[in-house]
Image (cartoon, rainbow, N blue to C red; front, side, top):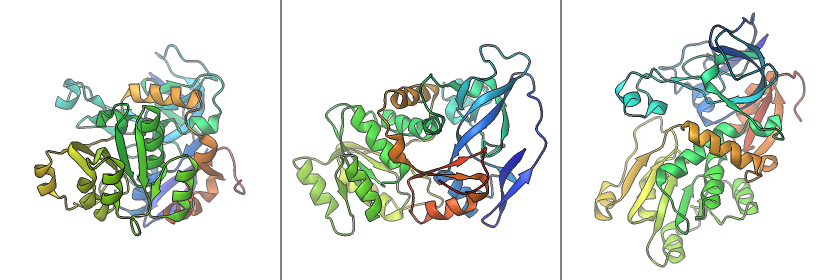
Length: 343
């Protein structure tokens, strides 16, 4: 079967390996689509070389169907349409015992710490499966994982209907956070440098600010009658955004750090102190977030046709990353069953 693996030095390599039957409590999936994301870019850039083992078959946003079922697996059949919640925890560490299995202190993030979805046949623990209802197309189903990220971020913020939220960064996760926050009843504005992405954000009905030409603090103060935003989501990963995020939040407002920052950043702790702000991290998701994400996609709340910029074949994965890095796409999917030209 064909695979795509990160081999170091910003390089990917197509491979051909033997598939194996699923072990006990596993299923084997026939992968349909894999979404490429910012975490995958961090892997490609070498920012996670201290964590990953090369060659790494990566990819954790996916959809597919069950190809084979291992011993001990119940409730699943060949042909079922699924996605995977790519977290495998030990259940014994202090975090797990406290009910925070999703951020297990020894977490196996499948697709980073162990082989991921960029392979035609993929064996995973049956407990990681999430069932897809009838009527959801396989390409849209590959969006469940990033939508679950957005759901978790919004839930973590404790945003309530009628509140105002600022999303810094109009990439895929930033846009999904804006959509989910609005779906949960908030008013949302997005801050984004790239003109094409601002146009996409505005096309979805959100105000979009260019931080180079707009006084963000003044705009937000006018928008909130001088109070500041209830919640600020930092999704850009930029040092300047982290430093400025605290200036946009109201007294006792919340700043949620969503982006992966590969190096330490400056934070305005004087502002955190002065306004009694909450500074929160939001990492991955819980099963309830996946279930909500499936429901949002099923009801059409997530514009899959606008989120998916294009679909590429496996041999075009490296070029697809170049487009993502340059901001020329929102979400690119890899059609794992296809070799040839992009659509």
